[in-house]
Length: 216
Figure 1 (cartoon, one colour):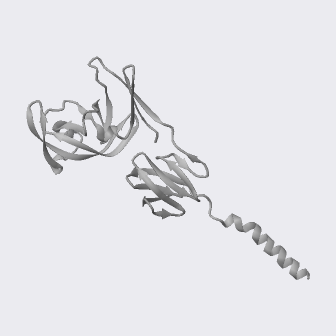
Figure 2 (cartoon, rainbow, N blue to C red):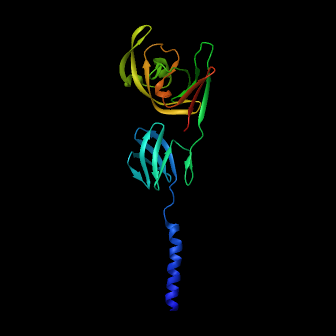
Figure 3 (tube, helix red, strand yellow):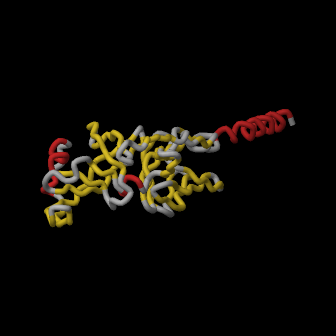
């Protein structure tokens, strides 16, 4: 009987410690977002998941450029790129950049393009970020390797090339792999910050001040 009780006590002890062996909630960071895909760091390991794929108990349900929907331990979570996610799900503070309108009624600021500081003009009428061939050379962009096209300027039709910039950052709001057009010649005199960058941010104009914000 004593042996049976000892065995029962041992079994009880095992039952008590078993829950400690259950897998903990994974630590997750969202590093990049794409359409129906996201780059996640799960417990320190980087993994790219497409919508519907799972890894270590994390399932990517959907993703767009502004956020991802994850399922973790049966819980559905909406999130953008975050500082840290563990037992608490914590998104980064929104970053806001304010650009005052100048005397010419334009919004001009400085951007970090491919790692170099360049003056830019915010232009919501431009479908893409646009720069001239001198800008491209200064940024180390081999635009001749891009897709050639023609664009209409005040001087008539000129050659242009569609390229992809490594990154464009304004006040810490960074967008990678930005589509751009390099125009042969001196136009535009200043880089136009067009919609291939601006579509990734929220824009608000109040009393002559344009605010760009992004929550991740």
